[in-house]
Length: 293
Image (cartoon, rainbow, N blue to C red; front, side, top):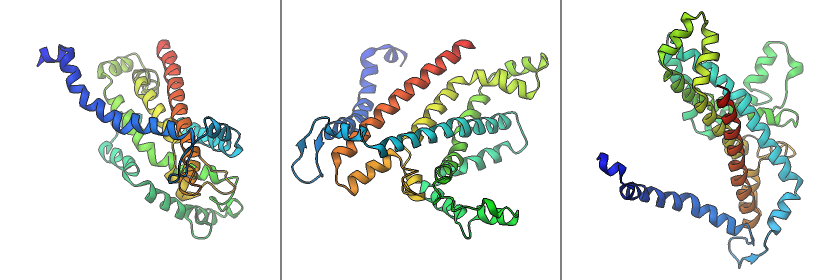
């Protein structure tokens, strides 16, 4: 077995099926979308080659840039709100609190629930007449803060961000928790002997040890926000007045409403490139952070 693992031919033999599967489900659709992005095609009639016309139209569309801006806001919310909350929960649980297994399971439950169910739940929370949020404000005699949360242009995007953050806190919490649990107890014990309290141990000892996991979670959060669709589609469908518009929703509209496969494919290609570039940016930033430790 050890000899086989050292053989390049054996390694290639075992990797080849996975490589074929990867090409079939990832690379082929990407290449197809790239090709379609150069066409004027409705999916049925004869396609017409238009070159970069779809990209030119996309970059000149103000709604597209609004959608990109919205995904960047959602990404920032995921990174600077979702991940810190997940980290706090993970470090508290990893410190050995009572009921650790119970809380770990409860926090992870929203991740297991369908996004459709999550969306319907939060629609009920935000409902202007009988929603839990406005009802709570009534009980606290704060009627001046009541809103039609999903219909108000000033609150709609934040109302979409909150369910996104809430749904995946448990996911990132579990990643941070597993990484924190893998930190050597000897290092933590040495910090305690040196006089570090629990907060100092968590921030100055545990977190530097789990930077690779923080980097991975940051990438997951950013990419997940950039390709967000289902929650936005069900909660607001891009409204009101397109203030919650996202590129994936535009792509869906172009394909199923406008029958414009070329325009939709150009958005898809842009999203792929954007995800790759931001992933490289995050990798570079964390490489600099790791060097400091």
